[in-house]
Length: 187
Ligand SMILES: C[S@@+](CC[C@H](N)C(=O)[O-])C[C@H]1O[C@@H](n2cnc3c(N)ncnc32)[C@H](O)[C@@H]1O
Image (cartoon, rainbow, N blue to C red):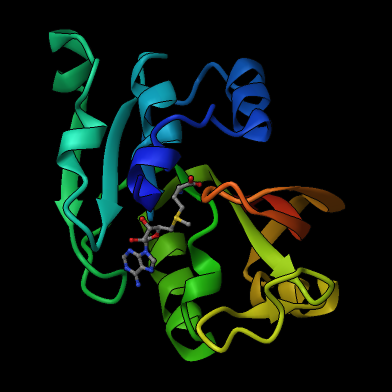
């Protein structure tokens, strides 16, 4: 089974589910690095219009099992973050994807995200910390809390939760997860 097949079986992130429950005014969202669509699907099923962006063509996973009405709320853009067009939106989410950007690309992307957000729009994302089992993999970026605060200095950080736990990767390998979970707002 490949990564996207495994990823398609995962539940949406709990922090996003709770956020949407508490913020019913969100009508539009962008999912950056949507993968097989665990979060995108949750959003369109909750009446939110979503632009899902990924460099891989994930349409067969994204549209699977959605109703015609839900499909109508979903647009997929196959693009690298550096080339992607981000429409104006109430919410940008990016889970387990920003760590794959090098720092220079990330700074540019954060600027693009800020410009895409409507007034009072929200940005939810996560980053890996240096105690993560994958630390040392040169394709992945790892951060200290203060570095994340600095990267997000042009946003208002509402939550920055640092969580360490042992659990499975999408490929069913046990690992130590060290993850910073962010809820930020456009200022
Ligand atoms: C680990 S998966 C996470 C998928 C999903 N967001 C989740 O939380 O399950 C990372 C996704 O980001 C995409 N991705 C990574 N770097 C990217 C880039 N520079 N431009 C566009 N997509 C990228 C990958 O193709 C992959 O689908």
